[in-house]
Length: 376
Image (cartoon, rainbow, N blue to C red; front, top):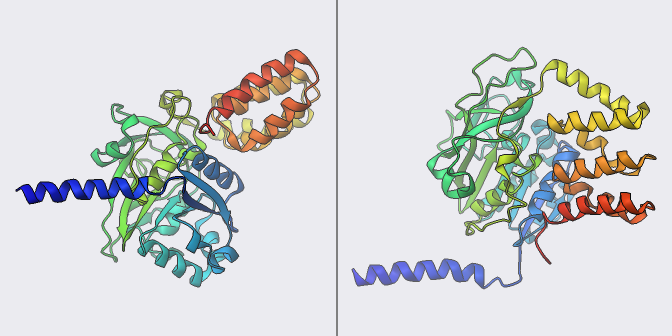
């Protein structure tokens, strides 16, 4: 009995000392930036990893993988976009390199299209590394919006910040509907279950997404794979879930993030974009081009309220609008949506601002955005 206790204590100390021995050596994460990975998904994934004090992040291309960049990484993330296009851009040899990388003890996270790429879906270009297959793929364009999920007992261990919540909410954008694969014996754990029925577009059937896996995780050789059908990295207050997934793949301890980073109360209901909403959203593109300052501000109000997927790409230039009120409202939009990809733009806008009162207000939002990052 004493020997067992001593051995258990020894193993625990070994795990802790392994990470402690790294000292200032941070975990190195690569985010795939090749064709098929959507630009905003790349931006947001990189930003989410920047929130973790123990990680560094870089974009990696197909040629980087071929040239051996995986030798200098601990984990890889395949972001959202188009799974088949990512497959085509990677090529067979590079996917073999990624599989070998994971089997050697490294980590991989797939987000939406990346999760799709990891599946074992018949008649679909995929990597067969997560033990699941996608169904109802003819209705992939089923819709998007803030969607509800619940954690399983395993998920609560990984995301204790959400363990006391019956429901939590993140952005879903046409992610795969997963079930267990019929052809590969690769078991996975369901970490969370989707609760929202998304069928707003594409004549998608009802009751297809509810009670389906939202997050799954599995062993692969000596390494681990985590698949998310949703977009925490695109959800204010929930971006921290992505580095937490990376931690799971590398068997790293769970650490706490600041209250500024962890804010699950920001969304407490479903917000699905209807066809009418999508039309309204599209029209606001022209408002930003030709509208009055008041119309632009009203557009930002609505787009932020419904968590527009498209608007985040449009707001960047509004930081430099000719109208001071628009500049202030845009700074607020960027800060309150946790949009770290535009941190440099907000810093530049504050530096260039000549009106003292406008600058003062914009600096408040800049500080709020900066507070998402670990202290240096």
